[in-house]
Image (cartoon, rainbow, N blue to C red; front, top):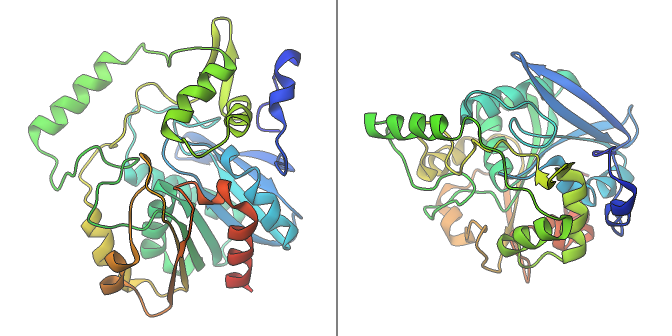
Length: 310
C-alpha cells in the first residue's frame, strides 16, 4: 500500500469502493533525488506511465489505475518531487520534473509507451512528448491541455521572463519557509480543507486520500508535500508556449476536458485548442465532469482511454 503505517483507529478511512493499492512499489534515482514509483497490473504487460497534478499524489489514481490494469496493462505512476513519498529538494522547477519523468520512463524500458497525465501532470507529459517523441506511443491528457486562461496548479501568474525581482522574491520565499512544516490537523479536518478546493469529490474519497497522501505525526495529520512549495514553480512559464508547441506532436493525442467550472479547473474549451491541434488529435468534453474527471467518472474515462489505445 502507499501508506503502510496507518494507526488502527484510522484504517476504516483507508478503504474506498474500487480503490486498490498498487501491486509493487520502488524508488527511482533521478540525479540524486529519490522518486517514489508505484505499479498496478501484471509485471510483464505493456506499460502505461501516469503523472498526477500539482499538489497531488500517485494515490489519486488508486481507482483509475486498477481499471487500466484490468484492461491488460502494467500501470506505473510516480510521486513528483516534493510530493508524497518522493524526496524534498532544494528547488523545484519544470525542468526538474521533466528530468524526473525521463528517469522513471528509463526505468521502464527504451520502447515508446502511452502517457496519461492529469492537470499539471497532463501539461508536463505533453511537454515530455514534445521533447522525447520517440519515447511516446500515445498521449492522453486529462483536463491539462493549455489555453490562454490562468492555470491554477502551474502558475500563480504568467511569467515570460525571469526578472531580478522575480528571482529575489522566490529566494526570499525559500529563506522564509526553510523551517516551516505544513499545518497539522485531524484526518477529517484535512479532508475538509481539501474539499474547499475539490468541492465535487466526496468526503469519503478525500478521507481515503488523506490516509495515502498524508502522514500521522504526534500533533496530527499533515500532507506529505514540501512546505516550501507554492503554486507557480521556479522560472519562466507561459501557457501560450505550450499551445504553440501542440501542432508538433506526432503521436495520437486524446484530450479529455472538464465542463464544470471549479477553482482548480483549467477551464480549457475545445474552441481554445482547435487552431493548435496536431493531425492525430481527438478532443472530447466530458459533460457534467469537474476537473478531477478520472476520480468522478473512473469507469467512463478508463473505457475511453482503453478504446483509444486499442
